[in-house]
Length: 362
Ligand SMILES: [Zn+2]
Image (cartoon, rainbow, N blue to C red):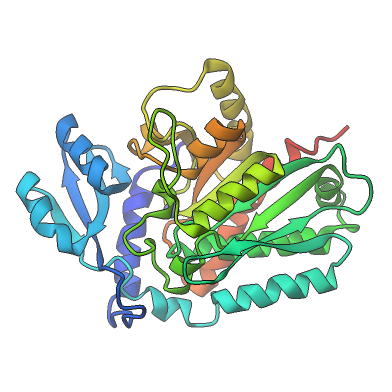
């Protein structure tokens, strides 16, 4: 039932084929070019070296794709002559699809959140929990039914921690709209808001998102969280703001949406060590239900891909005991507009089953 790795590679190929052509215009000058490399190896030392300085983002058997800055290509060549660049600029062409109006700009999203707050004032409230490094608002939309709230569980759905993974934001916005429209009409969706407070954060990294870029400067936002046995690290403002937000809100369950590969993953990412067996059983039990409909591949981040330090799911799980998922949606980061509904369909039941775990049928 597993999704074959072939889909991952297919996604990459589609991305290059669909998006070839014009280079995205350089925007905010200081951002370095990010390239994608590929290597086929079983050499653990080599993989460790790669993982310590670069981002391993996909894997097919023993073939790994990883991202790094183009200006580090000489360094890569020195320790890994067989590593090949497969895409000089991973963001090349992203803008051309994104600017077809199918994808929201950051300003569109700000407006939409406040529109929703006005239109659905009983159940939706915008919480601006900080500012990004470039003074963009950090927004959560908090959804819950009116009435007493002491027993409600706090759950969180986040997207665009990586600002180039545009499909994640689109999916989250459309699912949010379904909840807003369904409240009071659809029993299942209504029950979510009667039992939980859903914190929807459509853009975790606005500075990356505004430029359709994974990194903020040279920082990968999903490697920017402290981890067990690691040093405390200074997170960029968008991540520091989110850390505070979660600490303030007692979040007990979360999904961080990424793209792409059609995976549903749980901690740990930073080590191949497994979780405590009781904790892992809880993830596997719920995870199997979450992927029943979409057949996403389920597993521990570090075992499905490769260890990665400083990710959100590890941090929420470790610091707050959150049931913290990372979902890799779709088969590309920016599918063509007409394919967006298919990805929403992929994600819907997975998300509803997750919410249902905190809003059970009595
Ligand atoms: Zn990502």
